Image (tube, rainbow, N blue to C red):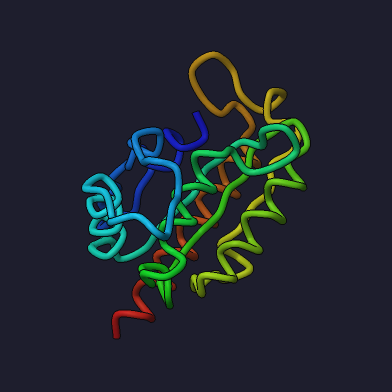
Length: 156
């Protein structure tokens, strides 16, 4: 719902592409030949002007499929200087937020402080179909606008 809220209120010149194939990536193995699905994932990142992560926390950390996907980019460099935004929406979320930020810094993603958001107690801010909290909606728009500014700055 949080991701849908963001992509349904985009900036006029922005097109979001949702990559929903993380679960198809094989387990990371830097000794293996690069699998086709990993090549496709890396190409999608390479072709993106910026990246927005919207993730829950799972077992006090980043969901395994997301961490696995990021591990596939450590040596290939798709995130180096790439404008990136992070939204963690969970019951708590602090552990996933900090873990994801550490990983993104390790792979040299370009993250502005204003392009990150930790949303704790997310269930109290959504209903069955959307984000119901007006303050959260404004914060999501602010994160998106900052990501767009970072993309514009990096492409000049």
